Amino acid sequence: MNIHEYQAKSILKNYGVNVQRGIVADNADKAHTAAKELHAETGTSWYVIKAQIHAGGRGKGKIRETGSNGVVLAKSLAEVPEKVKNILGGTLVTHQTGEEGKRVNKVLIAEDVYYPGDSEPKEFYLSILLDRGTSQNVIMASTEGGMDIEDVAANTPEKIIKEWIDPAVGLQGFQARKIAFALGLSGNAFKEMVKFIFSLYKAYEGTDASMFEINPVLKTSDDRILAVDAKVNLDDNSLFRHKDLAEMRDLSEEDPLEVEAGKSGLNYVKLDGNVGCMVNGAGLAMATMDIIKLSGGEPANFLDVGGGANAETVEAGFRIILKDPHVKAILINIFGGIVRCDRVANGVVEAYKKIGDINVPIIVRLQGTNAEEGARIIEESGLKVSSAIVLKDAAEKVKEAIS
Image (cartoon, rainbow, N blue to C red; front, side, top):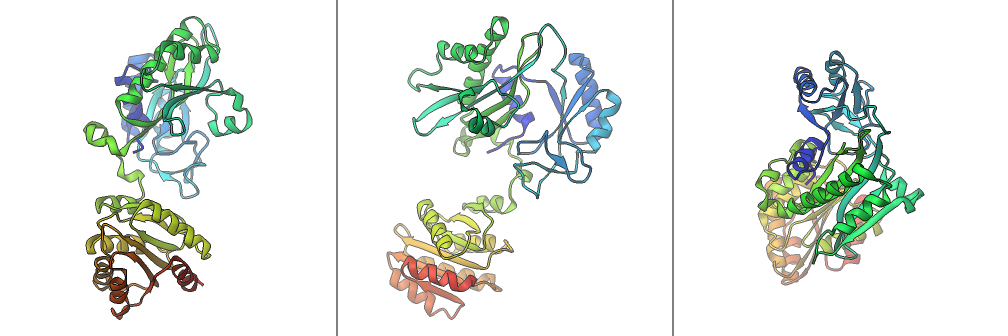
């Protein structure tokens, strides 16, 4: 589950991580009040206004309607309302959102932390995630903060520092110091970075996160270490242990069809193709998408109805797939292991009749327990549904349907 920057920073703050202070607002008046509160609290006279969406690249992104960037600087209280109005309610287009962009419903009014002092501010990159190859958490750091880490990895991979954490002993002091040394820090900034890394790792483990990315981590001109931005991804499977974190979910940032599928207990991911697919099992779903590609089509979705597929889940799957206007055909590929194929076939027939007006070809491939009985039910239904036994047959029928 993705969360907004302001929510991520509240989590970090609870675990003792130093963050750039800010207040969230959903209109210009509240933003102006927030700026006044920040001035009273921190003494800041410049204010960073940040669009809150689930995507990166906000600083370089543009609001389609106004041309404003997604992150702007107001150099006085008087500038805050107008700059906020240029962002709120607009569609922010970044390299991660694609051309459709994302609507901005909230902004974060943050303090200016790039103030002059004894030394120059310096930006770093820091993240924690699971390395599935080693089955260990890995801390990644770089002196190239503020940049896309993918560009750093491609062009200057030597500037990425990696430190793997043994789960039996956890993060060790020498590892945090090793990272701080590698970032070229010394004195108070070095000590602050070591504390920062320990607090961040504690937050990562304590929230059952799948990724923490802080870009940039800022060394201020007076050698403080702060999280200026924060991207946090929480493991959906752990949310039953974190009711407070589950409440941070923003459904407006998610695909409506994926939200609807979740309510029906379906695992659904929308894609950009023209062939909808409904399958039981993630591995079979991947193979089905390969079959669609080989037939000359493009998968319109990943949809796993699970091992207990019945008429209700099939109907829900149909309704969700048919809401995608790009779908030209639907391939249902079921292996009858836990669930019987005849039960699925009856579910398909019932759902088809209940939904009524289905104008795209449907190919049903059933294998496993009672597969012959399932095929017979499909063939004798009188509906515009064709059955297939082997994957090759299913692929040929998909090809015919979309040609």
